[in-house]
Length: 306
Image (cartoon, rainbow, N blue to C red; front, side, top):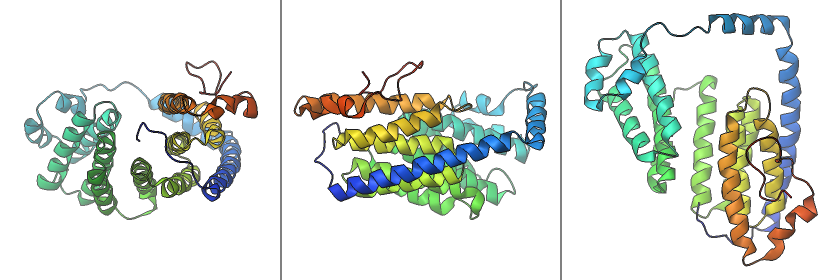
């Protein structure tokens, strides 16, 4: 997203976004209550106990870590020595490692995803697993798109998003990946001046994330919404999105999402400070909205907190 504060949004777009956030808040609370009740069921408790009991440290070396320490040209020779199941797990872990690098080390993430695509498309590994190869290609392309957005290569990012959607297997179990593709598309729209379309995309993705019980995607969509609203000086509505994202990120088991939210709060703070140099209205937000729910024992604050 550009560092420049954009022109105000139309009243219709702001009203629509506020209404969408209200619906998302209601849906999120209902989902939290439902998940809470499900977690108390004896069969779920027993399943969690069995999973914790089986979570023992791996007894053998991690093939993915071995591959990451090698030049990509040597991956094929190492992978062919593994079973198809080991190949799949190794490549899945490399995709996950690439995703963790997409925002902070986008060039490396781009190179890693290129190597993954070479393996699954040209070398056709894992062997005799066409479905798995399509899955891995789709996920790698989503990571590539995220890295390209970080590099401001928006046209190439849109191409990667379209390729990812085409590569992902059909079926409800991959809807969450297609939703992530839409979320990335929304980030491209936001960065290229299509604020209205981006806000609609973000709020639709947030609602879908609730349906899929995908807390990471929900926080990502809400944080993206808040940053875009701040860029257009809609601080009050942005505060609503941040408060909701903060509540989700603070829920038990979601603590790792606080880092994602913190990065968005920093960007919101920057945009607010930049705007207040030209328009003092940003400084009056906390007076109009009172204490912010974002303040707490964590190592960050909402930009408008007192």
